[in-house]
Image: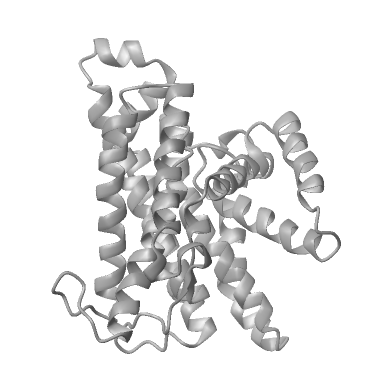
Amino acid sequence: MTRKNIVIILIFAVLLVLPLVANGLNNSFLINMGTQFVIYALAAISLDLVLGYGAMVSFGHAAFFGLGGYVVGIVAYHMGMGETVFGWAGSESALVMWPLAMLAAALTGLVMGFLSLRTSGVQFIMITLAFAQMLYFVLVGLVTYGGDDGMSVTSRNLIPGVNMDDPSIFYYVCLALMTLWVVLCRRIVNSPFGMVLRGFQQNERRNVNLGYAPMRYKLTAFVISAAGAGLAGALWANYALYVSPDMASWLKSGTLMAMIVLGGMGTIYGSILGAAVYLGLEQALTAWTENWMLFLGPVLILVVLFSKRGLFGWLAGRNSHD
C-alpha cells in the first residue's frame, strides 16, 4: 500500500461518506458544496487530460462547460413553452440529455481543436481563448434565453428509478459519473494512445520521427476532454437549475486551470483535490472578505514554488504521476 494509494482511498472515502455526515449533522450545505466539488472536479479532470498529459494549455474549456449547460437549459426552455427544437419534442431523460450535451461539446471541440492545434504555445492559448469568448458573446446575444442574465431550468433531468430531487441521491449520481470519468481517463493515459500523447509532451520531434501524427492524437484527446467538460456543464445546469453565459467565460477556464495547478498537473486525482481546496477556500474567504482572490493568489504561488506537483504530489510522494 503506497502513499499514493492511501491518499486516493482517503479522497474517495471522504466523498462517499460526505452525505452521511451531512445528514447526521442536519447540514444540507455540506451536500451542496460536495456536489459542486464533484462537478468541478469532473471538468478539471477533463482539462487535465490535455493540459497535464498533452501540454495543451487550453483557455477555451469553459466553452464546453457552458455549452453542456445550455444544451440542457435550451431543451428544458422549449419543452416548458410547449415548443420543439428543430422539430424534436425534447426529452427530460438524463440518459438522453447528458450524452447530447457531451456530443455537442465534442463536436465543438472537434472544430475548435482542428483549427487551434495547427498552432502551438502562446498562439494555441490565444486561439482557444478567442473561441471561448466567441461562444460567450453568442450566449450573451441569445435574448430568448435570457441573454446576459441567463435563464432558469425548471427541473432536473430524470433517471428511471432515481429520485433526482433528493440532494444526496443527486450527489451520488454526480460522484458516480466523476468516478467513471476518472477510470476512463486513467485507462486512456495508461494505454498506448496515452503513452504516445505523453511522448508528444516530452519530445514531439522524436514522436514524429517514429511515425506518429501529432494532430491525430492531440485532436482525439482534445475532443474527449471537451466531452467531459460538456458533461460537467450538464450536471451543473441540473444542480444549480440555472445557466448563464458566465459558464463559458474565460474566467471559468482560469478557475479550472487554477484547480489543476493546486491539485497537481498530470495526476488525474489531483484535480479532485484541487477542486475541493479551491472551492473550499473560496467559500471560507468570501465569508470573511469580498476580495478573497487577494488571499487565494499567494496560496497558488506557494503551491507552485514549494510543490511543483501540486497538493496531490505533496501528499502522495514521488509516484503521484501516472
